[in-house]
Image (cartoon, rainbow, N blue to C red; front, side, top):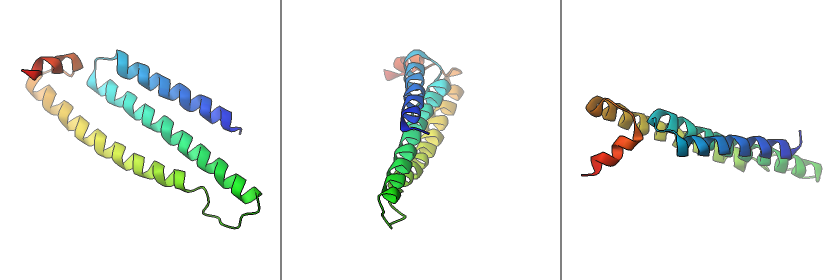
Length: 112
């Protein structure tokens, strides 16, 4: 499959995530949109890694580990995203227990 399809699909996912973060007020939906943006980046990293690996093998390279760096980055991004979600959901649960709402606009009132 050509790399342009991956780029178009990842750009679409990323744009949907950005629109969701900017327009939604529910904190859980905002976190889901952030995860969508991270997954779009992961898709691009894997696609470019695969393309780089295929180009290295076609060029006569004997190193089979060429192009796996993108997949390693994806692994670390997934670990950081899992930690971000666990901390974010804990904050949302505590906010809901105290305020009985998960509206992100309510957080502006908590500054004082």
